[in-house]
Length: 368
Image (cartoon, rainbow, N blue to C red; front, side, top):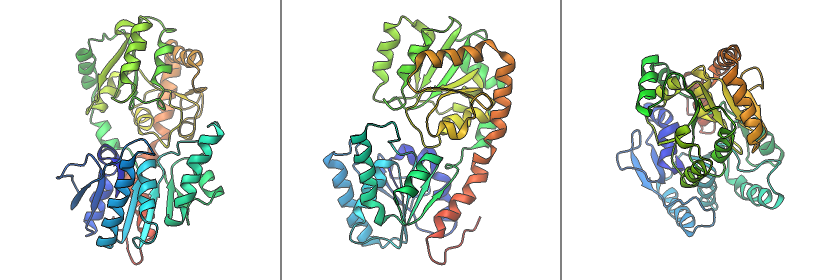
């Protein structure tokens, strides 16, 4: 199993590695930043992936993968994340394992992407399509695009990787109250929560701009770290938002933070099938999100959440104001949203994904 970073493996794929070990498989994991004692991995393979597509380090990673794959004789290679999936399949040109699966966590292009960038990214996928026995997509746009352009020998859809509902349900209202106290927030403040890596694609700057248009009692908590964090801090200072935009960093206790919040918000440019939205909906929070692929697969506007045009801070603020001012609407969106995401929970999704994984391996049967 490969991915760009170990953080991605740790967040989404440990249950699947555990299932492979339960089946008696030997499992190797390759990515950047992997610890030698990674759980459910018989071997941890460090790969020098870097987020810039043209970085020489990525071609070194592909060379290392090619050598490893040739020497190990793997029955199955599963590649995650756009960058690692491309270079993993590039390493397979000229020969490889019995079967290769690429899991698309959201193409980094869509119909609104500038033509040149869209063609470059689409052509990269076309280049490695012959090395892709099975491509798994998570949203409708990616599925239709992959089918239209024949980006794999087989294309199938899965309902994401599955969020851990049991973990979320262990948090209590008291945990939420404690989290508020730790951030110095009162019960009267209206807490908007966004949990995401800081990047241009996640567009936290739109949320900060929207905050300047909301009442003083609104507080935006931006969890996470990443490349645009300092720019976002500077933007909040420049808009004189003071303590109304909080940057607490990475959190390992998101269930308690969902309990702390009054609503969840996200302004991403595009998504696959985002965990943070599914988790917030399961926790009964009304969600306000940009109307982009991935979000629109999860949210019916006005029924299970509220949508706004990508990049439109005024529209974002207007939707946030609606959930702030209308308690019955908040309750309705939260209740309907929670009911709608049950099929994306890990207990429901894991057997389906494992069946897809094993479908390309001769004589392999899931033991779930």
